[in-house]
Length: 402
Image 1 (cartoon, one colour):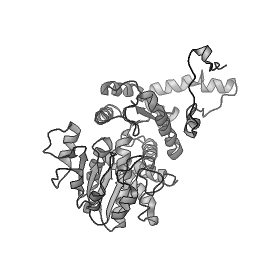
Image 2: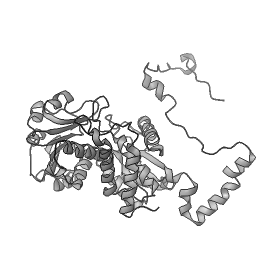
Image 3: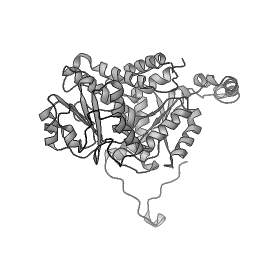
Image 4: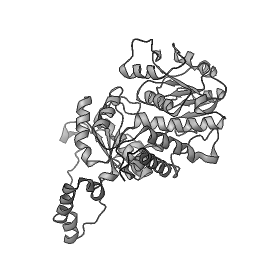
């Protein structure tokens, strides 16, 4: 029997907290997830198969042939969603316990949109090596690892070290999911206006996890030029205040050799991509090239309000669900992991990410328009298309094992 909840101040010595009258609290009460059995245990025969003695046969078979773990356990269809709670949504460093509602949400999106089971794991450490060691030790139970809401620049090192040590897909969604969906939208926006990626110069506001990943990914995909700006202006080679991650991005980007402020970099630019928050002045948006694209993705307040952006841009996208062209990671990560797990990929390659972006863009098809360069998160065609493209790319690149 569950323990009785005591609410009386005289019994506890403190006032019981009042729950806000808010549907979000009602929905989250008790959490958003539960573990559900996939086989029945109705009688002693079921019990003898699901547990002892039948389970011992399966354990022995896996001990003799470890690859059988994919066939006879949940490993091949379950992802660990791992965080340390240091960069949660726009809330920042709120700690592991406070991050759990988001991790649970991520897990149910995996299931809802990709048919992939996921387990939230919030770690009580922010030490890079401790996180890596912990995940390595947990990895035998999972087919993949989705890193979530880990602050930059530690997220880069954590992902790199885990990729080096594990033979299952490791994917930091804040970086790569955002980059994949951005590329998909950008491909379609370019197509709509009769251009290619190679014709475009982009300016990215934000040099954190998402901004750095988007810049690298756009270069990989063949964009004409891209520069990244942080709070101090354009990340350029002549700056002496750069972190290792920013120094690397300075070497890779900004072929035009721009310096100075974000606003000055936007003059004549074809694309603005915002992943930083803050506000971009209307005059800077007005200075962009004709038929520009404004992807202002900060939530809940875009860097450029859509009403302002529409005055000057041919295509406008945000991170919000109440405007057209929502750049939403849920378009990417469920299908990416579904495809990677389907072929037991050892990792997620750049080619697999580009295949995912192309698949997302392709779903739009004949519906392509200024207010439809990216499909809806609820378009049921998206995850299967992404999964198929990712699986095919994994096989083509030699990282598939089935």
